[in-house]
Image 1: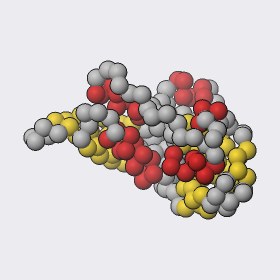
Image 2: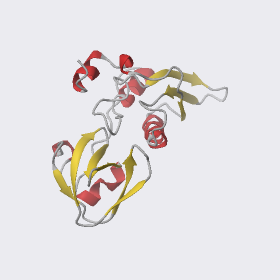
Image 3: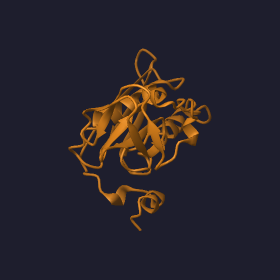
Image 4: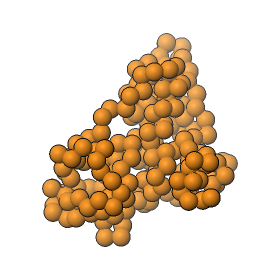
Length: 183
């Protein structure tokens, strides 16, 4: 198995069995046949994006082994307050087309941590997408919800997609604009 950390952009990998990725940006299933070669466009967070005959597909953590890739180590978000740890987890979530995390992209509009009347901890995140019609929204929100709910001290998380105000590149950090070549 290849370590996740050794996967790089431009690397050719081969499906060792059939894989069903999520086509980007539509979010629909994209079948990758056994022995089919694909080119990695990014390997960030806990998933990879690959070029499959000029179509992009996101490959989830649970399918990495079908390419002979060991899943990445679990997120290490054990230091700091609960809110700081949640922000750290959000910084480990990436847009499948842009090699910048969703925090630096400016996709997170609000984060609230609440204690419910029964004592459970609820996390609510309002986020947007770079394009309102992006079919990857449900994939990204599910991924973020699972990551947040895996944190010690979080009982439940709700990720809400919002589109007001609309996202534009001015919401990106300076570092993100440099990475994306917008300077």
